[in-house]
Length: 189
Ligand SMILES: Cc1cc2nc3c(=O)[nH]c(=O)nc-3n(C[C@H](O)[C@H](O)[C@H](O)COP(=O)(O)O)c2cc1C
Image 1 (tube, rainbow, N blue to C red):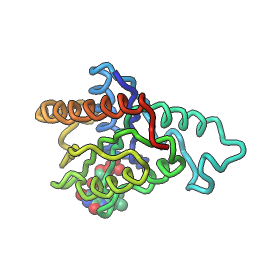
Image 2 (cartoon, protein in one colour; image 1 turned 90 degrees about the vertical axis):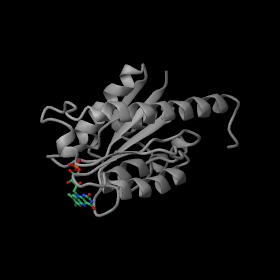
Image 3 (cartoon, protein in one colour; image 1 turned 30 degrees about the vertical axis):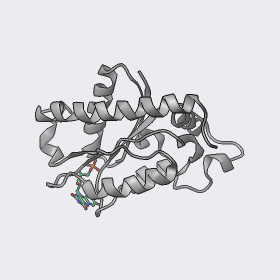
């Protein structure tokens, strides 16, 4: 049982990503994990001026967000693909913090309405999470033609994904446990 931060990557009013994120939240809960559901649409953070650690009086919503990022044992960003990259809102949300991520793994989920499932965005996100000190696990989970995978209520319509996601979550759990065990012995800095 671990604490996982699921981070939504879209604030578009017609966003597909929220269905992906809610489905994965459910999957993680079924495996008895605690999920910190981070939705930039609810947070409505401004474009980054000062990082959290540079703020004299951070607003309560950023204090709460920091607590979740710091407490989490692993991260699951849910990225759309915008012009072959991740979304600016996801990057903006991540950039408020740094040390809070250190020595925890990430598992990248990407999606798109096209046939490639946002894999280019996922590759770029690997570089970002490496810099954050939360390296991504070997597998990533991509969902192509996301508009057909869930129904309008967000229910999974393509049951093949239920099977596919198990393997991905098994792998993530392995890394989460491994990092957690090692953190208990201390970290280099
Ligand atoms: C600004 C913008 C750029 C996009 N660029 C890509 C792209 O490079 N590759 C792709 O497969 N889909 C692209 N799309 C289509 C997205 O896959 C689709 O809009 C998806 O629903 C976005 O996720 P969201 O609905 O959660 O915001 C783009 C969409 C937008 C709005």
